[in-house]
Each structure stands twice: as structure tokens, then as C-alpha cells.
Image (tube, rainbow, N blue to C red; front, side):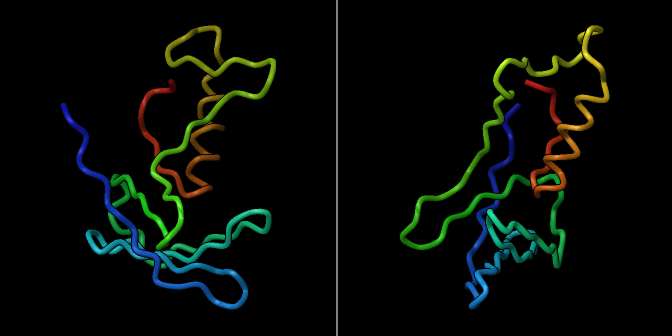
Length: 108
């Protein structure tokens, strides 16, 4: 089964404080964000919460996927592994969600 194509976000502009406005022409997702180190994000319209969103600013490298590596000396939680606390998986998903990354798939 193939994943649906990603929705490409459009960079609408950046204000003097560094906040960027992004909009999805497919589903209407709309948010403003300031990237780290002073990260802030405000979702103005959720759009399709199941869609994968990608985007790039003109003349810059785009973003399209995020790889998450465990901290040094740790191993990632394995889905269905009885030795892994299910709360650990919830913590990862909560962090992803809080940082604008929708993920309902299995833990890699």
C-alpha cells in the first residue's frame, strides 16, 4: 500500500521578528513558526492532520522528513517489546506532536 503524496507547504513570508508564515494549498493547514533556538509555533488552521507536510523556502534547502536517533548509550523503544515501557513510546509521540510532527505509525 502506497502512502499518499505529501502536501507541499508554501512559505508566505517572514516578519521582522523572524516568525515565518506557512500555508498548505491542498488542505488549508496554516501556521506561523520561529525556528530554534527560540522555537515557537502557532497553528492557525489544522488542515488535514493525517497528511505529511513538506516545504522549502525559495533558494534554500527543503525539509521533507525527520530522522530521530536515540541519545548516545540508549536504544529506541521497540513496538510490542514487553521489556519496553509503553509510556516511553507515548513520550516520543507526544514530543513529535508538540513539535508539529504527526506520527501514528509503529516505532522504528
